[in-house]
Image (cartoon, rainbow, N blue to C red):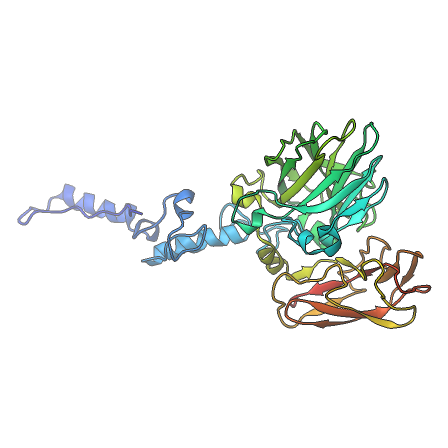
Length: 430
């Protein structure tokens, strides 16, 4: 990319006049700074040109100091989620581009019960990793993993959650998909201007005329779902609706939402109302969810999809943020009350760490980062069959890409009962 500084060629024997001298001197004054020397970028679009061995969003390796300064300034701005490299950081965490945990839904395909299909009846809540949940009312739904963009080789475009209404009588029903925010997310969002975007795909037999997306905050207890109700002192920061297309991704976004200070609750909610009797694939697929700093949702297709999960967990230094694990699949012997039992990679719902664990790695419980068990708030373990809780000390053992966990069972536990565990895996120091 050309420099602005130029040298005026003079023929041999040219007489140095005052005009020539002043013009050459002015050229030095005007263009003799670092930004006008060497092969620099004159615009953001030039900076974003990918030239080997530069990375996506960077320039070619620099041939001068000014080139390197321009490249580094762009990278600094990109990493910090700012438009300019020297902008104030505010509440944004360095390196934190996506406020949504597991926005690519990549963990859904790692869950054995979701991969094989989960059925929820009216009023039931199905929980997934990283605080995603699904709840139908007035209908029965199946939850599974889907490909948001078929026939695409980019792995970020394959992962999504699909919710399908099962065949039943006519009538209007409602379905909600939600991510409940934890305190660290809310703290990072406080005072920020944020935008959010996702992609929606309808099934071939979709009966819902539209899918809506909401972002709400409140001042009630942290770690509580909003569901079909409202938060305490709720502030609805944004809402949007789109008409999904069968088999074709449709973007949905909310722009320029200012998160007030002092909020303790937050949730991103997707909801739709199917109608009539389903005669085909009455499903909605959601993926590529991304919330970031700025007044406008990112529109570049790959950026819309968000970072792949490995980049997300590296930015957050966590591998499961206050996630939970079901201790067993139905019918598996999980132990008795008062007895420490192992949850192996074949049993836990949060069964595979999707990237290599950095050292040291720890399981956190009953700490400032915990406090969210979707079945029992603040309980370390809960027997779903009996409704009893137990907050005990657990022991975790890590391997390269999985973990084992031991804890005491709640009172009344017998083989075959389903136990929800509240654990977080910390992949690096804070």
